[in-house]
Length: 148
Length: 148
DNA sequence: ATTGTTGCAAATATTTTGCATCAAT
DNA sequence: ATTGATGCAAAATATTTGCAACAAT
Image 1 (cartoon, rainbow over the protein chains, first blue to last red):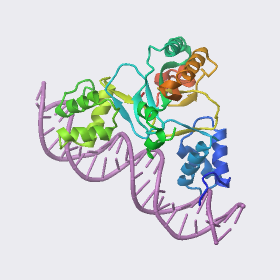
Image 2 (image 1 turned 90 degrees about the horizontal axis):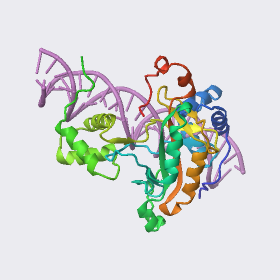
Image 3 (image 1 turned 180 degrees about the vertical axis):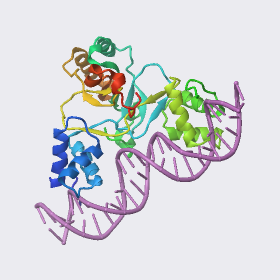
Image 4 (image 1 turned 45 degrees about the horizontal axis):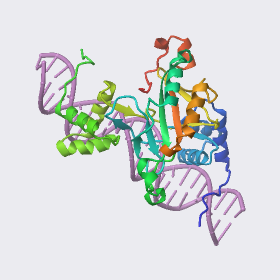
């Protein structure tokens, strides 16, 4: 049977890794594809996607959000944060809200750093939703969960 | 000429707004589409997308991230935050980093709220990147900017 | 009449998958 | 030989757009 931990550092994979490592502009998959093509004209976009996914899964690079493949909408328009459940993928309102001390501190200090170009921020928590905290997550786990 | 501020509260728009307002599960566009179809069998998905976009633009509902349509990758794997420029769309490393006092406070307090299911968090700043802060943004603005 | 809005279909954009082939163990 | 990896093309997913028809002012 196939071993999910075994892998080979192929030429393609190495080139992709190097390109991401040396490029500080947070490139997209197709940008990396273009750069990799410069060195390996036959490389395919699918290989790039597969390897980025794999390298990120092993922590060799970072995959920046989104995470979420689909847009979501919220009828509650006052400021509040959300928690994405790493088991079932549900998106729920965070029990921590703006009144919380640490966030108040963060928000206050953000107002004082406008010289740094910051106008607003997005903060989202990742963890276990209420349901997955009470039921055993393993019995509940949705295979369609989005990776964190 | 067309006035971008003028709009009509059509039946479709009202149904969509109501559905988002009363649904607390942060529905996706196609979920809202399905609900709206229950009441208006002829409504189209395009109408739903157009109206969600429009309602969010006017602040009647919230559009949750992503914002970013495309995945990005980062070769720098130590913890650090990013800033998305609201003018040019560039994604740059934030000048504020984990050492910053407020974030240290946030991170510390997050460790103490594990009962709330929070395991990690995603934080991203929105504002003006270094380049757009120094040049006049209006001369620099990229039409391809992603809405915040 | 003007102009905002709709439904439908087609287009776009991004990412994933099936599959035969290739390559390393 | 076994199994991981590739290239290619097709499929899947999510969203946007062109356009003729409709509806409110």
